[in-house]
Picture 1 (cartoon, helix red, strand yellow):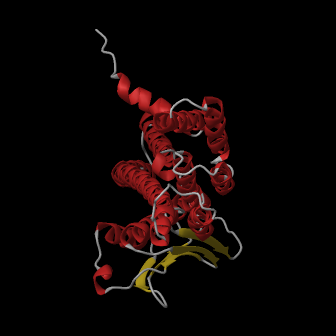
Picture 2: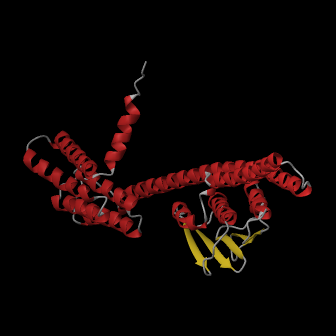
Length: 371
């Protein structure tokens, strides 16, 4: 038996996708024109319907360009309202909403200045309701309100995107850590026993020289099979997703982490050298964890990731410009895991205050694969 999904969420997803298209802009503009026309008919009646319809279409038409040219579209709506010169005309609502949209798409001071300025021009031109005594303070508030709303929506969207990116990074990190743990367990346990089997078989062949040919061939087969099995185990472990990431993937990591009011940069220093797979993967994970900690636990607006290829070692450092409070130095499971990862490869990890503010994490990994 099949169960139909509720239509509500599907319709909402369709509307969300439609909002970023030309058809969505046309739908918004048409709805705005109908709203202005309907409010105008309710207030003034249908004495001059053609002119009212033309004015409603004219004030709503610039909304078709609100995403590509948000400030120009808002200015065009305001120009139509000023040109119409009708006191208390509902078209002003469209212009105010257009400036809110401009603040959402282009959060710049000029949007606020234009939003306040066009209302002042409207007042100076004498376009106000009969007997109204609205002061300049009220006009400034009317100009600031849509811009503030648009900017608040912009901040909410950026924070939601940033939280989603952090969640994806955390999910990737947890999955990769689990893959790496399983790989280490298999390598240490199975690899150890296969190595012992190979060594013991070879030792028996060298100690006892008068073995029957059948026994000697059996021991040779055991030694060769254990060596082949050990090579295949290592090959399988290198194909796990946790081992797929490397220092060459840091550009994608930085691109995903940038946003939400923070800028993340990557600097590569020194001639690129061949890096052992374990060091290559561990270096990426150390950079990922340090970057995640900086984005999650810091108020930094800038994070600098530096990859330095030195003779005999790779040095990864992550520095931010956030606050340097005494409580920020407490180590959690993430930092302890970073120290353990660096120690297993014979490397070092330093965590210290950055200058003038923020924190700096530096990992030095020697260019050898370890046991």
